[in-house]
Length: 116
Image (cartoon, rainbow, N blue to C red; front, side):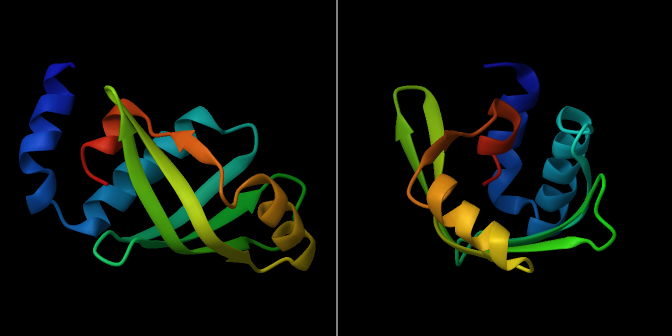
């Protein structure tokens, strides 16, 4: 565990969700810039919900994603997020999300797990 992660774990409960959202948005935009840009990310860690807007390359309108329920679990030193309920502003993506996202666990990056 690096120093930044240690610090984030210590202050995580004190950090507002808006700051967490900013950090995760920056992480996404840095690592997935080939897809487009995440313009907003609002996290409600108390109720385990999130809303995000993506400006995807090749799309004329932003994509709104509502994660209505997520769960975090740990196995060893890894943390996983499982999306339980999700819907988007595009019907065809709702179909894909149902098949590819719902019920699957994804490892949470080290920098993010300290604040989720």
